[in-house]
Image (cartoon, rainbow, N blue to C red):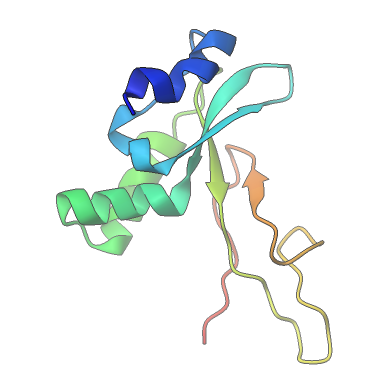
Length: 122
């Protein structure tokens, strides 16, 4: 599938939307943000994986690069980032919840300004 076809629905809705063809594998679609603007949606974890696989970066370096060069850009037409975090487990007796509460298995779309997730360590 060409990038044109992949991004056509987004660019039809918002011709000014910022896309990152180099992160094509991390593209998840588009979303409507407050104010009605339609912007691209990228998976943060998948974008980090692109840099690890394509550029041979270490995971921490790839995450820093994504944070600084992509997530840190907060213009009107810049993408939103999907953080697919693991659930936070309080106790064995309590139900699992994610950082914002609710279903622990549901992915969350965070604001452009919130880019850290609490992760469990086993």
